[in-house]
Length: 512
Image 1 (cartoon, rainbow, N blue to C red):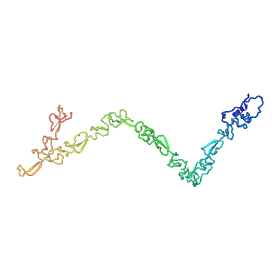
Image 2: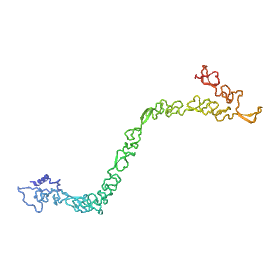
Image 3: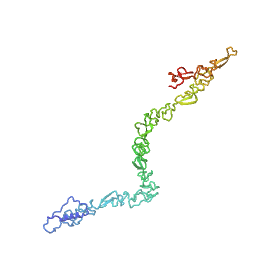
Image 4: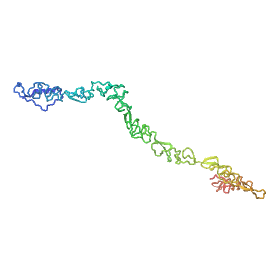
């Protein structure tokens, strides 16, 4: 029994030559040719049955009619052939030029029947479907007035708002005053035909103008400014940027913020002594550190000659300096000045504002004159703490002194002998009785037997009221010092006043 050798040879030839096939789909059901059992060496000569497939391969393609060859007169037509667009059922599947054909064309819908199709609506087929054309360059398939063969309207009266010639520009043949290729009318009209930089599709710039005629100004501008994110709202931005014509929300024009999470940190901020770089100059606490002073006497003030720098004080140091004696806790800038020839408040002055004013007291009556004053802590010799003496040569004359009938203003009140004079009556006949109608006032002599005793006399240390003021030896007695051990030196703490040295007293006070 022999196999159909020619069929096998045909299949091998197809596999070797490829015949332009990417792949060959086997028929879903294939009727294999019957096996011929030859009984002789001669080929059968019996003709094909008139009403059915035969076992013959008339076209030599290796496939008989009974094996599925639907046209045994053409070797290019058989069940293994590729379908092509030629009006023939090449692969014998009963379909002519179906969607498996290898050389189909693209056809475009031509809704306006102007011979140009819509590039967005197409089909693939061997022949053009009804309403489809092979040219897909129509820019407006809803209007036969728009296709590549049309001419753009050139008259303002014929402007139709359509891109007639499909060049991407509408009504570009109408009047164009600024020469930018766009007319002021039409679908893509020039919104400012006086400025060649303004027209549809123009580059938008940051100027508040609508250059591209889309109804918006400055969108997608080619010259945006750089803005910096200001997260902490301190008016200085970080290195996070945005490009826009105007500041986006949360952005500012100035950068350089070295910490955009803290509003007290930005270029030019006041530096604070806290370990941070507030002013963003790359230095921490520059110019903000405090000076602390060594306080040796623990009075809260330190010496200017021993200091340290820092944000917080060190042990033994204080924030206040200016102590002029750091070994004495009573001496410092806020100390109260004491009258002791020491500068307690460290202002460079001694005893200022604490010294008392003393008056020169020549007559030693305890009152001095304003023409001779001095400031001191204690009463200097020859001075008094009170002023106002109207006669510093008379010890009986001072403010508040009792008036004496001595022709002096003893009380310094501007009146002389007021209230102390005696009234005398005129005794014309010398009988010791005077006339009450004829009187005079005068001072009386307290000792008319002594010419040296009189109201105007100066008091002397003699146990006598020389000036008739009722007081004896006032202001003229000497001071004597008790000399208990009789060594000739007295005790300054034990004194007495007298005109002459009393017994047990001495003049010398050297011994303390």
